[in-house]
Length: 286
Image (cartoon, rainbow, N blue to C red):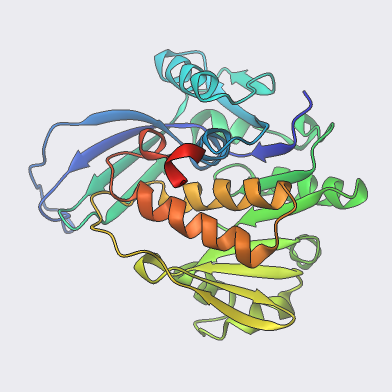
């Protein structure tokens, strides 16, 4: 496996149910028909990058089941190298997703095979940038970052879902990608984005939903506004942002320019249903 962009992360089947509102504790709410689509933060990020023209591979794990076949097929059809995709005895991960009429979602993930991805599986051969997210074991993520630092490979980590990482891992990041909630998690409830750099990463990008993103570097904070769109489904938009950001960085673009393109990609994504099926191609951006 030799690819310019290596994504190390999860591959899940998304089971999406439209609902008028989310149920409270002990409450049953009727929803619409279930939609099955390929997802998972790792697979989503890889597909988003591939559709934008990146040479990308996914290191992940799926089960030997129909959901695993769905993911393999979606990845291959999108142009993602699946040579490093492991097949586990555990079932393919599943994300149970509810989507309300305003396009907002809530997600419950059953990791399944994603939990079988071990540190010894990590191979960075030929990668120029490694992209990670946290639906896989933290020890695998931390090992991958340390290995990338040793091999002078750029690192982009999407801290989602939010989790505690070691100081050494945070210090090994070229770019830390978080949303506002994840930033607050790291900063003890604060919204002082420049303080993210005090944790160790060389730079940070904070996604701000419909407002766009904030790029944090040693030179300060740069706001990157988003085009105004009508959101239909926000599922996977953050992963599309990560894939677009990695694609631009792999091409040598500056972080702010990369964030501008990523914001545009995410804005297109939320106007369509689903995660991977909603991701635009490079020609659509033009």
